[in-house]
Length: 287
Image 1 (cartoon, one colour):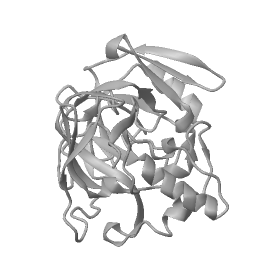
Image 2 (cartoon, rainbow, N blue to C red; image 1 turned 90 degrees about the vertical axis):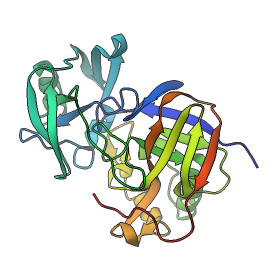
Image 3 (cartoon, helix red, strand yellow; image 1 turned 30 degrees about the vertical axis):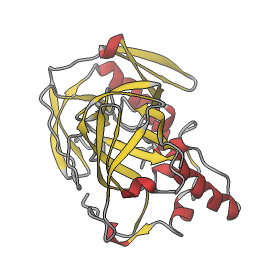
């Protein structure tokens, strides 16, 4: 049996924007360092997402000065660089109408830049210094401005299995970035092995299963261009990954909590310490 290893690591500085692939990352209670510490919100504090604004995918946020500054870029538009405000003026924000908290308001120049790019009011906020937001599922953990969990984990075997089905149906294979994972695993021979892992480790980092990842419309968005490319992969996933316990949605990947943090590198060996017992999914959809 081949050895499972970390194949890729990606963090997303601003929720909904392009991801930043890295060779190594520090993992803390809320996931990879810098992951989803920022998000864009409407005037009423509701978060903005690729679900309704696919163009967000083509915009990039780059961490500068070890997190003290950000640079924003996009196709055919001037870059913008701002200094990060760790605290100061705050505003109420919300996620999915389920979590309500506060965010630190960032430079108004960022709001102007994103409003022009996206065609609707969009203010940039950061997590507060005292930010605390429990996840949910089997292992709870903490999360920043992620949907509800610290980590999104997928595997190459799962993508290979999905793409084989898509091609068989006459479609084009899709890249892994459609699913916006934090950690991609190589070496599992069986697709969707991540569904069965209760607890695993890589180096000093320990990860606990929280729930299956029920996919919204975002995987139909081309992450390079910010354009909708549906109906794949949702159409094919619906043929074999429908989840009755999760409201009938389709799943791909595993949402996880950080049980112990530390450094993580591409190439690190992954060890599974506990498997989920056979039976009903232990964490049906709650969001």
